[in-house]
Length: 324
Image (tube, rainbow, N blue to C red; front, side, top):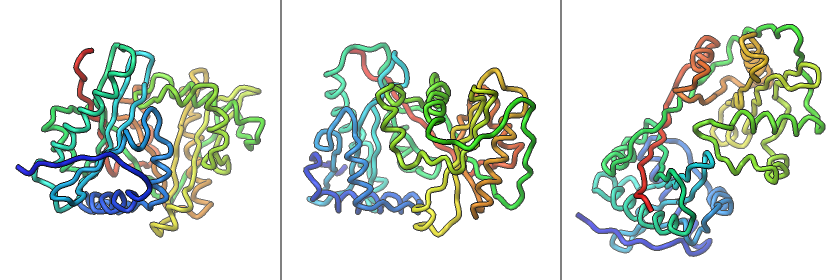
């Protein structure tokens, strides 16, 4: 078995290495995604809890860069801390037990990082994989990671959209600056308790950052109001840069939420179908959403009834960390 050597990320001089590894890894997984140096730099600039120098590890074999990992952590509730790894391995180095070595190195570094934080009830190693990443999934399973959750990614072709009526007592309003805080509060309410929640994202001090994010464009949002109360929402969006790069007309139907007092009235269906119509009118030919396969609100079946079909599945892998 070949033994890898590891070194930490140094500076922007490593960006070309990371891009090369990233592209080869995606190619091996039959994934058309291709990142740029600018996107790598942006991802590293947003790292929280670690720096690029402590949280990015490059794997070498015979003086050649073969893979890299990005580490970090977050909490989905006050009772846990989730230490994650995102890892890439070049196509020609698959199937040689190298990814298992990379995971072992990642775990060692994560354990050293975790030792610097207070004791907490639940600690896990975590990783993500899509169903087409068979090599990565095999390596995680060989290292005793188990699937903790599945998320279905669903697609709707926008050739025919049948808009459903709003229930009595609610109306759609154009979203202006005066409405943005109410939307953010509804998002915070929606995310509380979700499996994929990141607690720190919804601290009050994060609101200005959320508001300044260029993705918060209400052009395609469908937000229903009952008097002065936000009753439900679907925050659709279009990624123009992605569509230009991939030469497609693809939208996203996201943050689907109806508050408890307005459920079982058909509001979700009305908002979703209006969202589909808005994206279609903007020239999109399809739209995507993601849904927790264990969603207790039966959202998956609702989306199927409205014409969405699963086209791939994401897996959340976890492995308990040793007690302190």
